[in-house]
Amino acid sequence: MKNICNIFLADWKRISKNVVAVVVVIGLAILPALYAWFNILSNWDPYGQEATSRIKVAVASADKGAMVDGISINMGQNIIDALQTNNTIGWVFEDDTEAAVNGVYAGDYYAALIMPEDFSEKMTSFLTEDMSHPQIEYYTNQKKNAIAPKITDKAKTAVQQQVNSTFISTVAESLVKAADGVDDAAKEHGITSGNQTVLDVVTTKMELVSRQLEAYDTILTALISVTDSASSAINMAGQVSPDMSQTVLGNQRALDAMQDILKITSAGNIINSGVSGDLADGLGRISGTMDSIIGIYAQADGNIGRFSSLISSARINLQDTKSILNELQEEMDETLTQLNDIRDSGNYEMLLRLIGLDADKLGSFISSPVEIETEKIYPVENYGSAMASFYTVLSIWVGALILVAIIHVGVRPQKEHPQFSHTEAFFGRYITFFLIGQAQALLVTLGDLYYIGIQCVSPFKFWLAAAITSFVFSIFMYSLTVAFGNVGEALAVVIMVIQVAGAGCTFPIEVLPEVYRKIYEYLPFTYAMNAMKETVGGQYGMDYWKYLGILLIFAVIAVFIGLVVAIPCKKLNEKIEHSKHKSGVMI
Figure 1: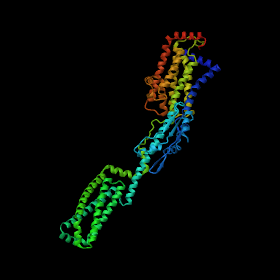
Figure 2: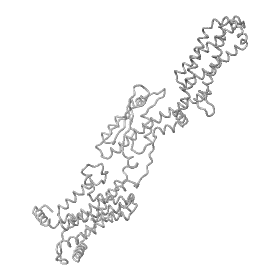
Figure 3: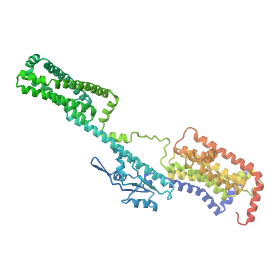
Figure 4: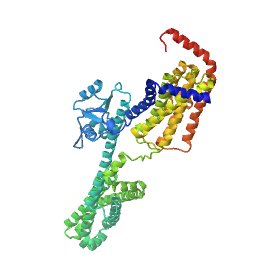
């Protein structure tokens, strides 16, 4: 232990007496911090609106528009109008589509969105038999930057979703407004009362008409009986002649009323058009027959005998009319059954609820029926804070690598320690590496927390993780250099490169090639970063201590390399050093 302390004290005495050495030590402490701070600041919030709004994306429309039911629409212009209020991307609106595309080739724009001439026409093609999908032409410059296309692709997707949402919303609003129009028209014609629906009122009206048809059937039966017996006809005519005209005229008015109802229900598509058409034809024929009866009675001038004679000649027409009436009665019964079935179905109840909704609200709902409520688990304020653990760990590794590259790991006998063992030399010199490494860790964490201002739920644990990381990394590279000399330094660089690519630093480990997924659990970066992430976003259980515990295992491995593996490699390192000196150019 005495020799260890003597080696350490002798090192610092020589450093303190050499101004250049002091400056170098200070530089060694500061450089890793600068590396971390610059990288964290450069990645502070690259996906925020303030940053992405500076990415230029051209938008141009050649859309000629389309006519739908006499209404002119231009979806291309509608998209441009909507994007003018969107600040997530730096939209540049070009009047000429060719200029927009050329701007992408020239590198003036990262991407361009072009609405072709037939965009609106294809958007409305679903109303025709020749339906085709509209397309927005998208141009992207993937040479200019590797990340920019990912951001502009999201902008393209956002525009596509906006177009689809607007289109679906417009169609839904139109359907509801059309249903409202039918409902209003029905109200104007008196087909609604109180809380009754249109279907309820129509059913009631048709039941009334059905009972009237039964009355008409009774009248026709009586008239036909008149023709069977002249004497009976004269007696019956004598009994009914005073009121006959009024009865028939009253029934005629009832028929007219029923025809009016049919016109309204047919216009609103409430009753099947085929059924309503047959019903209207039947009512028309009966109405004509009733007109004929009124005319016959008028021709008789109150003369019962003459009226009886005219009735007899019309007997065939009356029988035909009764047949039509019977068929109409059957159709009416069938229609009533269908209406009752519709009214009792769940679909009709759902239709009533839809018609009762606000058109704008329903359109908005249908265009985006599902809203995702995000509950952030371990929320991190910005990208810079999320990446702070990676850049801090990387800077500590770089700091340890610079140490072994500048400060000698070998100890020569001095007056203060003329004799020492390999173990004493190993630990005596390492104390200097440890202290400079701890200064690096302290400076970088203080800068992260109070200069950069990263998010951190536990600053003390953040520093503690950095301190343990610095200890593990410094002794690991120190041991590699003690055991293998310059080859050990090269190994440290190789291991760093592998860790940057394969420790899940910038991309999830699941998306990396298989070779990285297999070595992921054997890299010290993995556990150092995970421990720091626990202090940035929030701690789960004992994970923080578990990661630090696994990280310390690498320190044990490093000590074994430095104390055991280094001994048989000593002669080989001497030969390598001798060969380097002989070259005259190698350090």
